[in-house]
Image (tube, rainbow, N blue to C red; front, side):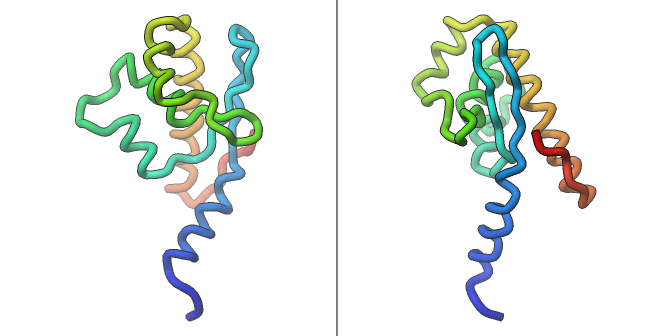
Length: 118
């Protein structure tokens, strides 16, 4: 066996990162993209044992929303603005659509299947 095990694990995950989804937001004039979860991202969104709260929608966008090139759409410091200055219905709609797609990816991976790519 050649190479470190961690290198093979990282290469395997890197091959899945192109399975990105696009959520269109006409209200914002943006296409919001997301890639599969990492454990660290799940912890940032769901960690702390507090369960899903309204602020979790904004947190999900900060952690997972990307532009088409894969760059983050929001900085950590912009979470407060998403919470207090953005249309709550659109934040919840975009985050909800993203969460649905990410959950479908998890279910497909658990079944050994492959979800469609956007």
